[in-house]
Length: 213
Image (tube, rainbow, N blue to C red; front, side, top):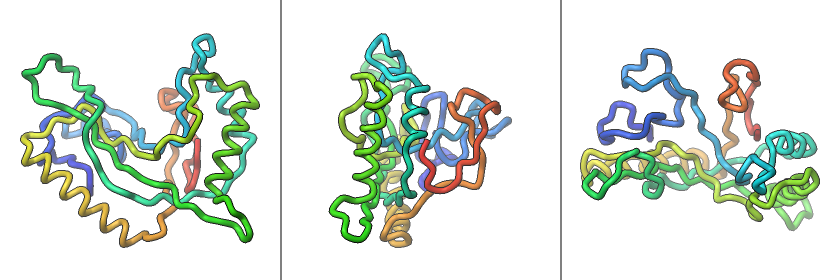
């Protein structure tokens, strides 16, 4: 398990807590407020959702994605890393430094017979064509984002030793996953999720395996 829910190594983090592993239920023993599991792997950064500022509306994103079809993509776990971010809400140099905890992953390239481009590369070409077709704004990245899963933000460890031990233990677990899935694995869930996340239970949909939304 790469999530320190028992706070053996972590001292504190931002108010959202762990963003992966099921979120937080009512009356969670950690004291965190109830919150969704917002784990995801970003493949394209849209930027602003306001077209007046060069953004792309969520309706345009839906329209573009509705025009695409693609096979499920296998994900290969690379490593857990820290740094960057912050988001602790503390100011000044006297506070304990904070950063993000991120699982770095890669999309496994698979090839159809006779193809020189992988299924993922074909998907990216089709994705950018679809976004251009619906008038995607200039804030959108012009290349795919390095795939990763944001696990927690504003993380402060009890000490540099605890930080070292956490990442050592977490990456040992990742190495087990790599041995279990040397060619990656299609990830997903049998559960339902609401999208957009702040829509509560109004827009619940089946997540499935290999789903991109």
